[in-house]
Length: 278
Image 1 (tube, rainbow, N blue to C red):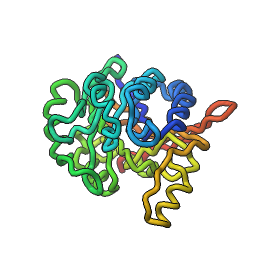
Image 2 (cartoon, one colour; image 1 turned 45 degrees about the vertical axis):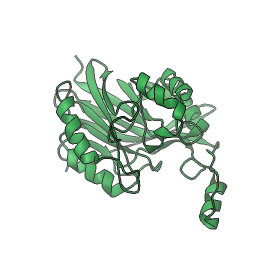
Image 3 (cartoon, one colour; image 1 turned 30 degrees about the vertical axis):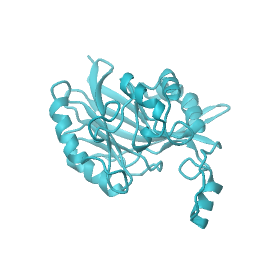
Image 4 (tube, helix red, strand yellow; image 1 turned 30 degrees about the horizontal axis):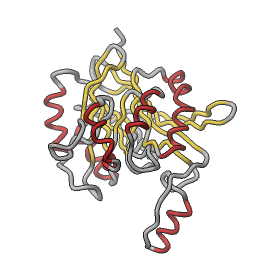
């Protein structure tokens, strides 16, 4: 039995450019990292905000094993039934009881079981239940099945994301931040063994403002008037992290942040190893 669990996590998929980038890069990333499970945040996959059943189904067919979401999961009401029916897509667990779908589940990762938990932060976000208390309750239940736990912490404030990482250090195997679409340079393994990054980045157009057309976003900031944003369609990239977990201890062995750029001759991959505990 393998002593490790290899996890590939892709940042927020933004619009068509993000979906196409994943289709182009994922086969290469699978050959490079040989992941046991591929997880991606898909809450912006439909036109830059929200997700549909059709798009989610296609992303799963493209080779993603688990889709997480966030506060934009509710944009398309037609997806609510899909959230209930499809076990491979999650929504934040700390929305009030009665929200469609599930906030965490246990999935096969090679010969092991990995629990994936989706949570939203509260600073500058929707007024959801406390994610710190939510993870305490979830871990009490998860531990009956597996000690391997990865959390997608979907948050606006870097301070809240970092505080959450320290809060669960040694109790979760990995905490991967999403939502800001800007990959942070703080990938590391915390002292208790939890792999951590504040934001995994995005899959989408590089020449954009967090995946949206530059001119529209600039106009909104300059005028302070309502402007309809559209997902950019320029040069695409895939950003995320690769995490290797020790299956026997549930601690992380390594975390690498990555950026893959598809082009006509293949894929250019840039990686950087995260810091190990000092």
